[in-house]
Length: 389
Image (cartoon, rainbow, N blue to C red; front, side, top):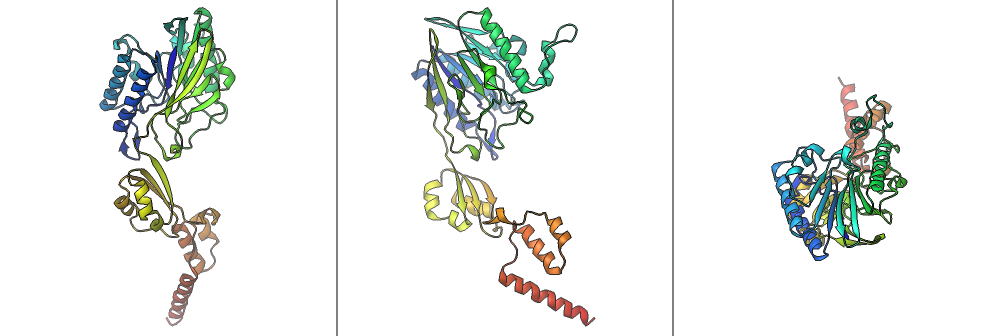
């Protein structure tokens, strides 16, 4: 059996204010073609199908189009909800979907698999929707209110995997688990993946995933292999400049009669590449940079000592897809890290106060030698003028 493992489509997400629907549609078209070319039997989507709990109508349209195209390849689709999704909204029309498309969002159904057969027998797919401990622990208590103590993601996911293993014991055959969580050992993209943990307590240990022949994980946007049979596929599209060097794609997983045989990375195209350009504003705006990156999403980090006038307008004149501009003066990391208020409190002279102001507005850069001379001249003139009053 051949399984395509994808996740984190984030339909409806914007990129620095720009819609990503057209780009994602283009990439998913390629994914569908890969499913067809590789004779994929089952497509697994491991959560965060939508970017919001209340997606716009256009997001539903794109999802329906993608599911219909995948169905037409002959593949079965198994989809779970993530921490961005509303399980209720994602699953509300699952009963109306055609045969072969399964949207798994019910915590009470974790032990009940979707079963797909091949020439070697059944393969059972156990879908674990994103589980918020405070919400889902009520589902696993008895009439007296007794149940497992589930206060963290790690505890909750471990309990869900116990349910999967119970389901495996009740259904002979090979097994695939699909989950959306923050597993121990992953390399996250800073500021991108919403935290589903509190400190280190909610990191799900790898041992929690023991049992199935393959575990398809979602939540982390870059591909990662935690064990040969435990992997993240990452997102099909770049959603942050922090991801710009991470490949986009999905895992093609093959099972034989005994379980996992191979995993192959299927790369997806990047509709518009991302690049971060660093230097003075004039250096960034050179013809050489424009020739290379005029059609890229650009993050410009300019290092001039002082903020430049209308940097975004100047950048977009040369780079139509400049999405982000940041001012990081050279040497700013080594500058005085005190706040403006702290500098003022320790200022003794008027010159110290002017110096504190300039460091505040120049990201730690005080007056130049010539500026210091002029400041002293102005302050001395004021002292002489006050003496004559």
